[in-house]
Length: 521
Image (cartoon, rainbow, N blue to C red; front, side, top):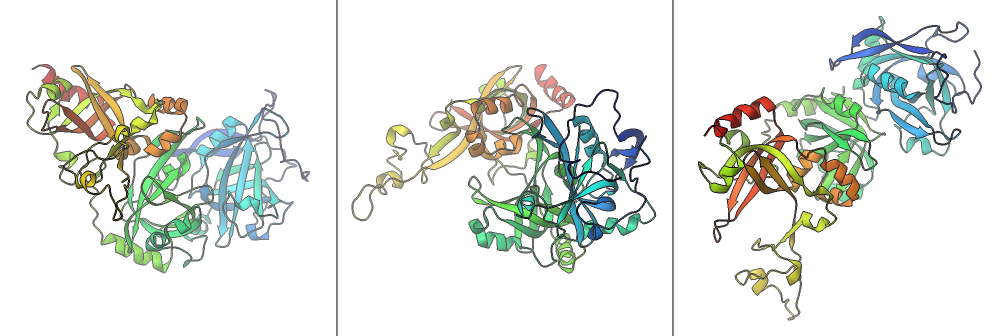
């Protein structure tokens, strides 16, 4: 069947209720090749015989723009479903799903499937990165000649992309006899084997790489906990931070965004999986004062690539024995969290009754979380760089401690002119933790706040107050387990400051079992 050139250009998603889609979701399930769960499989039903139903499979490298294609290949990249506003029907949204399919070492292209919101949502659940799929009746379209198509999509060696339609195309999981010829393609990098930076190269270039897309070859040191995030635009997504390493660098941060990529990362193995990361974006993180890699819509991950360098790195990774101490919010002298056994309630913290250590476990709920304060200055506490005493705006943020060399000697330079020493800034957020006995005031350090929310303090300060309010209510009144350190002021012993060493959601049964003996005292 010959289709007009504009058949895919735009369409309304509001179909009459008696119209049936060319694709239907059946009740069969199949396991994807990573064992991450079951996925629905799409089958064609009631499809007119006049349409091309995949009578012949073509190779990507043989396709020409303007033709209709039937392809079998492995999915090497996949985005989360999203929507855009229609150009033809103002105020309406069109829904799409993007992915990259590959059928040979040099043959891979971007694919976009358009359809209604429920259709795209179901389609996204039907296959994963690494699955081999069969695509029928996809339209082959030429890429823009100005290269704009590759600014936000995977760079393909072919000059076209594939477009799929809910009404005219199909995508199914493929399990034919030649399945084994496609699966190994996911382990071949899309860039030349030697075209990558070592982590040492990234550190040496520093901010010169800021905003650039580069390729990395590194092993997975640690896979962080996936976190649900609400973006500034109010959309819900997932975020996960990976620690990478190689022979030249013991730890380097990689940030993943989106449910598809975050879920895919859970199939990697810490200390073993080697990644060839093609076109990952590099940025300088002001908060951490270091370079950070972030995967975006151009990035393709090749796990355990079949290259000599990757195999050497894998052997090196097996010799490493990293100890992850999860030391955010802790001093080097603090005990490991698993060694903190004392369980206290707020009343005991205030009276010191039965307290035998400065470290304890506290179960409670967050009843105050000032993320949405109009005065973002209270996120900052300024300290003297020498004596660590707090400084205020009243003294121009200069140290007033007469016993501090910074205050007594360093305010003049060699010519006798007064100089102003910049204070050290400690970013943290005040919170209240409450239980059945009372409330205690604490502060969340920048590291702990970043661990909980996925945002650092500087990023939070840039979010409008209403956005911070929405984020705050994701954590208020949630039952949590806190590891705390109690710090007393030796000049005024009645003053106590509480530092949160870790925070996580508490299991209700564990919480009840732990505090019941304390209640009965």
